[in-house]
Length: 323
Image: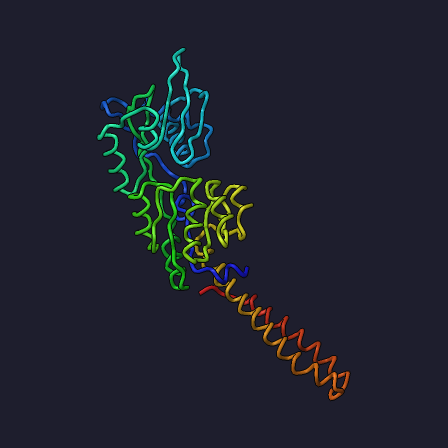
């Protein structure tokens, strides 16, 4: 509660916090121009058991096209990069790798300019694109879109009005993150940050003398939530993120963030006011009572009135209404 009233910087995760986190598959494309159904079927098979928003969108996109998927084998998540696995169909095992151009360049070799251009074009449109490699050959890509929460821009404006600096922290490509940042009006964008490095990004801000609040929802944010001076997790977050946070936001609207900070500041102000009143009152009255200048009955009543004042002043917080 005290940290909430003293922070000066609010760091906001992108996916699931500023955006809905419910991504949809926009298109699947093969570089050879043929039908992308085979590519999408293999990708959906590898993503079947993942809880990542991109995985859910790929699986839903394949189901919408009526594509049946086989059970994958040897699936391995590559945090901040993608996922790999094997899919067996009709006795033939295919190695499938889905992820960023950097990941595919590292795992399968050179990524063509055409593939890089496809990712950059999607990013320029505010969308995310992932490349798909089958048997160590980059064969196509998937384009996905996320939507910004209706309350995001207004919440960021309110945070700015409270004198707080707002920072968007994302693992997405810089072009995508900057477009979302511009749409909601944050002061700074930190992009292309691996999940394991989010806590380090918070530490760098703290090293600059900032008192940082982190708002996130996913398991990738748990370290950053724990590192920040104040961790705020949205209610649809994972259990790990919720356990790492100091405050749980039970409303899906991002207005809950400035509401919580305003309430914390008001509460902190009330605590200070009560302390000043109680100390001043007792410093003045106790010597009078000790010197015998107050009737014991009056002194006892005065002490009770002091407590009533403190409780009554605190009860005013029940009428708190966010601006």
